[in-house]
Length: 463
Image 1 (cartoon, rainbow, N blue to C red):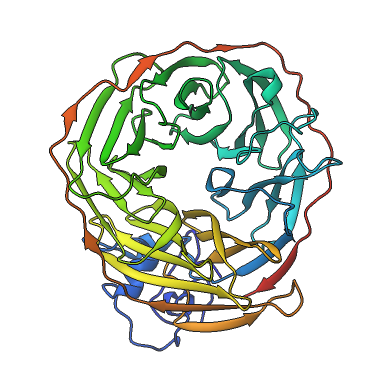
Image 2: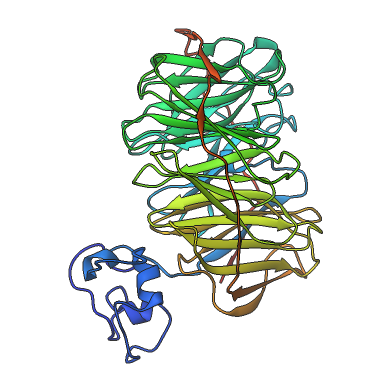
């Protein structure tokens, strides 16, 4: 259940949607304190002033886990998975008569298939994996869908409504390859980060206005910088960050294009094999949080100070999502037998850890997204297929096991524990030049009407 969006709320009591105790899953008459950890976590206010109004529309519902298709029929990454403000989830998958046709699906707030479409009518046999289609929110009720058809050497993109209905579509030319990240700023502009295969696999970025207008672009001067991430700022600018060897590089990209970007570099104090940064997020203070694929998390402030930590275990396939005052990280164990969800506050102090295990001991993370309605995780079970799960902002209960509706015989176990971290050391940031301005043109073509496809299988288990 979700607490009321307006009107009366109470610490206790037996009224669903009004009682915070009931939302937290405790007795209506249990002792309650607004300063308790469970209350503050639900309100997303870990410290400082807190009031009853902070609890409006908050949810502690474990919700559901949805089996959305069989083995090999989905291709989803964090870039192609998110939840909107109402709790609908969106993801890309392979559909149509060809295994490589790119399709999009929406699950409703209960985890059931609501609608689906293929935003372009072209043959997607040549789509470059892993991004068959990447999907992002772009203002109220609108979504961006980006992909790449290799023989056309450009990005086709579409703007869809919340029901995945086609609104418009064009090309952005400039020899970019497939998109890996998109940062959507408060004013609806999209900074699209792509992997440019042609020249030492550098990163390329272009900026589009909310109406699809071309607003400029940048090209990395560093080889192998395609393993990178982009994240929005509240001032409608964006961050770009990547890591190579022992060096972290980042830039602040100006709102609406231009060449006054701020390039920084920090040499870190340990040798970690050059793990890549591919996912990042920002909070309301424009602090940048980025994670390597081995679970090392960095925080970079607008004043360029750097801090970081990691869990002292061997993990991989890390994903990150920042919501309010908390940073959520999900990883895959090195043996692919379980996934771990970590919660940090803005100082990177550990809060709690959830571990998720399928009964066949096969689990990998595909995506992570958090907002006011909950945490949404995308799992891959290499034996059976893909699962999307809704998790409360406070994490799952202490422990439990659920038999899944599909596939037959599979169950799902979850546990909640605390965890400790090891700090990272950094050198002093210095200025460098890692980006150059690059121009991108936008064609006037709108030749991408939606095509039909078959909806993914969807068997839902309430948790």
